[in-house]
Amino acid sequence: MVWLANVFAKYPEMAVYLAIGIGYVIGRVKFRGVGLGVVTGSLLGGILIGNYFHVLVSDQAKAMLFLLFLFGIGYSVGPGFFGNLKGEGWRWAVLGVLVPAIGLLTTYGVARYLKLDPGYSAGLLSGSLTESPAIGTAIEAIRDLPVADELKQQWIGHVAVADAICYIFGTLGVILVCSSIGPKLLRIDVGAESRGVEQKLGIKRTKLGVSSAWQPISYRAYTIRPNGRVVGKTIAEVEKAVPATRLFVERIRRSGEIFWALPTTVLEAEDTVAVLGRTAALVNLSSSSIEASDPELLEIPMASYGLYVTSPKVAGRTLQDIVEDIDEARGVLLRSITRSGQSIPIGPGTIVEKGDTLQVTGSEAAVVRFAPLVGRLINPTDESDFVVLGIAVFLGVLFGATLIIPVGHLRIALGTSVGTLLAGVLVGWLRSVKPWFGRMPDAAISFMKSIGLAAFVAMVGLKAGPIFVNAVKEFGYVLFLGGIVVTLVPLLVGLFVGRYLLRLNPVLLLGGLAGAQTMIAGVAAVQEKSESPVAMLGYSYTVAFGHILLTTWGTVIVALMT
Image 1 (spheres, rainbow, N blue to C red):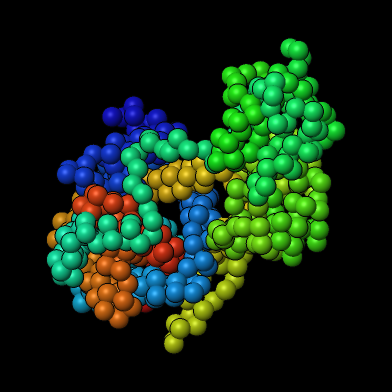
Image 2: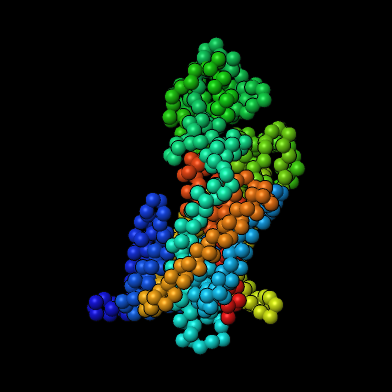
């Protein structure tokens, strides 16, 4: 033990990684599908190590990891946050704001009644409402308080203690309300309701790992019959011969040689041609040809890219006009059009607008040739735009550090954490509007969120370890009971307001409640009980509001309780 204490004193990063490892072991342990999760597990892992060893933790390292996490959260929820404010989305926006707001008011009332200090109050909020990022915003707010450093460290330790105690029922409470209590109070059969939603939305159930064999666009090889209708015709004539569809002859095998087709190339009997088109049209080519197996001929680099519309040559024109007037559109087929984050119906008369994203498929050469006439080519990438990341976090920290919000007699600093979160939201939204801006792969964002928060709470736990046992003895059962109230009240208020005032679909509402408290296990429980994925739609409508508001409440509750 002495040797290990000396090692941790010299290399404190070892203790942090050990706490994360222990946390992931704890987080993966589940009883009947319910577990603490890796974040609370990492917190407990840090507390366990900190209870036996004195580990020096760098505040700068904690801050860097937490800001990285917050930017990742903001980036991922940004498109949904603004998108759900449009049209009928206001109902979900009301629910997404109502539940966190009731959670804050309930936390404040319970904390006042129990006479908790700011640290315990913040942990009560973060644990009961299952939003661990509120730990970070609360700690930042405590550090800015005009009190003695010793008291600050004590309150910071109390945040971790209360969060660990309250998170247990915080998780269980959301699962119970969403999967059992809520359906009984609303008197619904979640299975039947889910099937009704599926039918209305045209959703077809699929098993994990199973996908449709249907491919709407593909390349196929055909050998032309001696008496085929296309013998003696040029490629340009053949491609125009099939009405109301677009087929393209890309390559030809003739007498064993393979070459690229030109519009003036004349087809001969026994030619084998590689044709690109929609599958529904390709299956009708058997009358003048025989489908062939020719891997070498079909070895064509096929690209599926997004094209961001900026060019006046395309913007404001119908798809039919674009196909007929722009020669470079040959060999390119349209899969979908996205406008303001929403997929729109497509047909010959669909007008392309500036700012649309066209998802196209064709040979790589054809797509790259067509792209400059449309606007900007959006290449798939596995690289992160660190220029945008660095500047956005810098501006977010600057904004949060300088903005003071007056609330009655209080003056609440927005805080660098909340500023970074909002910067992430803004970048994420801009990314949805301009897909070429600030691109970061999903894997990179997932890593930011996972390691950022896990390492941060592990370091919080290392500092809280020495006071954990005494704090639990003093306030453990009181915090646990208070946490039950804070968890249940906003869920039940949201349940009845969402159903009877906002008139939301009951199954989607249950998912929305889980989203408003950012608890994915809650919506998973609804999906398991209903044997349907539709509850995730409600979760997606509200989770952005939950993440942003509940994280911000860490700052607010400290200000209210000081």
